Length: 114
Length: 116
Image (cartoon, rainbow over all chains, first blue to last red):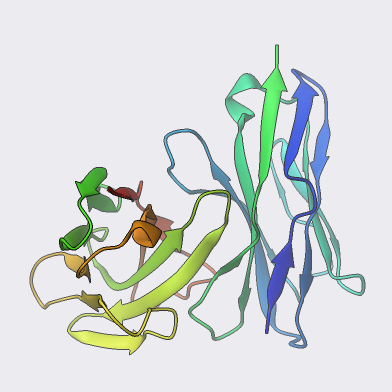
């Protein structure tokens, strides 16, 4: 069974600094996709960034980037120049190619301090 | 184009009552997913539906829970005879035909169910 582990229940960072959230996953499949979702207090799930397992290049979206280590099954999220609006729960998620089920980690609560 | 709309946002039910949660997918989307989020947990898959069909309900509890997505109208997640353990946030997501989950799925804001 696929599992996703986020080992940091809570993290905090000062505004304008950089923070990295960790995520590991377990799968025997070779075709899969990884995601980071943001859940602010409004509860809306917002897709932050997506990585395809067959792509070696790490995905980047503005201030958000990932460090995808396929052999280690690691998928960390780096947030640069942190902003107060980045305060939220962050969930790492996985979907096997051809599947219709997202598997989520338990989340990391990130607080950006002024 | 409105996003995925869920209502109500908050629902309080007494033990033994029925809860009906509604999800209107984005315009043109015919694939709907329901997820449950327990306190301090990530989202857990419950069911995947297409118009008038349940495709995968492997995450649904065997009793008291049902889901539908009729030809017309929203998708409904129905919980009969609610118990305290059903208290959670229930999220709906949708995508368009011809797309895949890994490329395009949009979530609603969820319904927080509280059973008292």
